[in-house]
Amino acid sequence: MKPALQAILIASNNHQMKINVMTGYKSITFREGHRDYHVGPVMLCDELESWVVKANIYDVQHKILSQLTQEEWEADGFSSLEDTLGGLWVYYKDITMDSPVTVVKWNNISGIWTEEENIKMFAEQYGVEAIL
Image (cartoon, rainbow, N blue to C red; front, top):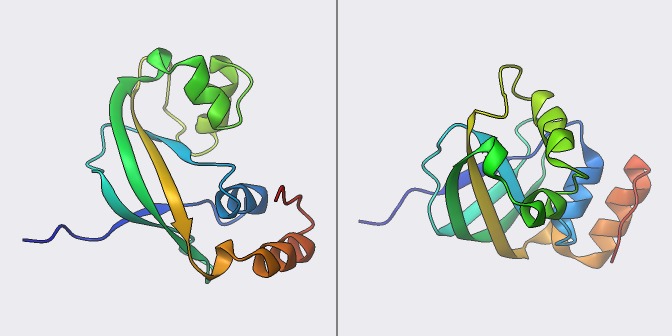
């Protein structure tokens, strides 16, 4: 039996995060709770806009938030573990340093939104920086 398609929602209002996904600068996410992601294909998408890229999950770990490594929180653009907690609190109001989290890492992004001309168009449209 083939596994069902996996999806990870990217915040609709965070256009810089989308650019970072599109360019491969962002390739990790932390989700509250122990989630059932597995190694294999994943769609990174926005539930409110027509935006999606395909990637490949290569690592999934279940931890307590306070167990995130410096390498992990820095890879997701945070400056400290406390900064990570603050960033996650925007989406998960009850999260604490003792909360379980799922760490998902991906690579091999592809799709129309990973093409350079579309990245530039998106960045210009939303006034965000694209590191190519």
